[in-house]
Length: 573
Image (tube, rainbow, N blue to C red; front, side):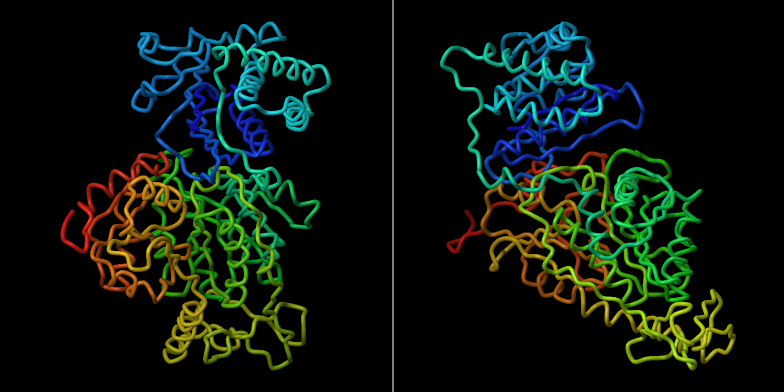
């Protein structure tokens, strides 16, 4: 069941989302939620979709089964998604006349009037929470527990008013249905009750802690700010030093300084902020400093759509920086990967002394759903710092291109770093043969990075005729879209590391009769990368760059158009 709330900034939709998803998950339902919002403090029109299911759901959908308008203009942006099967619930004053024609199912509930009777319009959300709790057969005591936990900071008087408002909504839910009519019939799963309900922000943040992160520097910029806030809240308990820098230039240089001194640093930013970090990125490349960059993508150019989502910074992350030096780019598609790939980024950066990107986007960071658990079995505590001797050479030429990395004060040797080209000891040089040797040394690291590439995952038949390729946060929408299409001749190949590109890529692509790429950008950036690395092009692309997340319906309709009729062993059917 897909529920959409539409209201204004400042109406408390995020609190309602948190209360409802936690309450439903603890009741045994699989849940997913995502909020799309305008870049303003108050007003405008924001919406939150909550999906409730007997199976795991992790994608934002076009379909709306229950729509709840919470202000006068709440329905304006949803006419293309509200159908005659959509149940509209709420105050009559907020329901547009076109939906009161008798052809649309409407459940009129004076939510604001009830809220004012309980102390004010501010309690409308808890009235609505109570109504939904009743419709989904949620235990009233469980509902009260969640309200007490989420709203405990309001004080006893306001907390009690919220509890009373939710009780009134709970009672009202019984009057919405005809005698003998069931409310909501969705199968519950006992194990879901104890699962982890999390968003991408927490997944990345926890992955950094698992990877040994000790320092975080950032200048706030949506959608990456949530990761900075995560570490700020965890600083005291984890020992991580968190610095809100005066700008992104300072942030990236602080992180490089932390790595130089033996720390394990993360910078978190978005496209416009990363633009200011590029000179620092090249500094890391030259002095061979580890660096982990979390880049939360959003639509550009310039300020673009600052609170929306897109996958349009792949080429920027890949080609930014002056000069040539190695890097790795991870693009987790699931929250489990958000956790595992972030600690893996610290491992790669430390081992190969190179920048590593964690490429997410606004949709990945803000969406919430339940997962069984985060796998700690693969987390390992590895450090690659050496104790220096008196004859230590920071940039010693090696077969792998990776030189022993010392830190000041740990051993007898001197640890030199210079942004000019340098010799093995770290002294400035303009010797041409040394320059050539140093460039070759740095680029050799790509061989090691390629050996540790996280391979793409194949979903579906191994003897596929068609192959749908996607990366990062698009995975769940593509999976559900292909399920809707119902084709057993088509498989999905998902990349959670986009650079270096896995060597098996060409083999997968060559086996397919038709190859379709799915991306949330306008120029098929990953398809261009694949073609440049393998020489293989795609037969079609499904691209979305409106600022809204990719939906299963987008994928289903796009594949239906591009794949044509299914081939059978007896000819075309």
